[in-house]
Every structure is written in structure tokens, then in C-alpha cells.
Length: 204
View (spheres, rainbow, N blue to C red):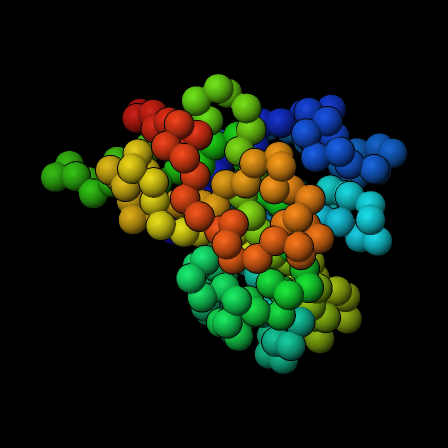
């Protein structure tokens, strides 16, 4: 599963890569080197044909959740590609609310005799990685306010990722952004990235 990632992209880079239609950045965007589940993350979504960058909680809360947020103990920051279309926590968002999650790289941990060793995965050519995601809007009964949240879809690893871990994020190409966001693409695109897409680095 993917539980840590980084995002060092600038506003200009995000606008150019994802063809956003927003006029100005929604907030300052300092580099982030250790994004964790339940942290706020910036995701790209499309509303009425317009693409925007929106901050969301990393850990999806489905709109039908009727209990306090603290009682949501399921790990919903990742959704498995094999069950995302049918699992109750994710199936509604899969049909209605797609998003893209920009990343500069992500971490996986390897069990070694000395303990867990982190590895950092980035694109070989240095460009940003884009994970397939889902989002939803939940009404918080305690605050009376809506909460936007998201999940990152993970799949089987490619040959390189399999050396360290048994899962990896679904990484989309630029050509897949539009069909994923609009719902034209389905589970057929939730496949492991080609091995040349990611390269691991030992994180000291």
C-alpha cells in the first residue's frame, strides 16, 4: 500500500501539467516531503468541464457515513484496483467522483534484519507522478460543514516495485487524465505502470 508521498511541484508546473482552469492558486504551495494518511493533500478534479486543484483529507469518507469521523477506523487512504468498483466504501465514488493525485515520489518500506528500510520511488525522467484517485464530499454532523476527502488507488506492482513491495499506486499518463476524470475510463486502466516509469532510491 502507499502510505507516504512527496509533492514538490510548483503552482505553474501543476497548471501546465493538468491544464487547470483556475485563475490563481488556492493557497501557498511549499514543498512537502512526508505526506501521511489523514493529512490534507492537493488533488485535481473536474467539475462541469473545468479542472481545479482542491485540498482534501487523504482518507476517503463516503457521503453515506453516518457516524462521527473518529469512528471511521477503516484504512481508506488506499483503494485496491481489484475491488474499487464493488467495495461499498469506494464504489459510489468510482462511478461519480474521479481525481488525480500529483506526486513527486512515494515511499515503500522493506523489511530487513536491521528493521524497516524506506525506498523512495520517482519517475526515471524526473517528471511528476500522477496517481489515480477518487474523492467524495461528506457532511460532518459535528461541525455542520462538508468535508472533502480522497483515496489513492493501488494495484499489483511492476517488476521494479515488486522487489520491495507487493503493491504500487496506479500511475496514469497524461493521455489518461481526461478519460479518467470524466469517467470514460474504467478498471481497465488500473494497471501497474511500465517498469521504466519508476526508479527506487534507497532513502537514508
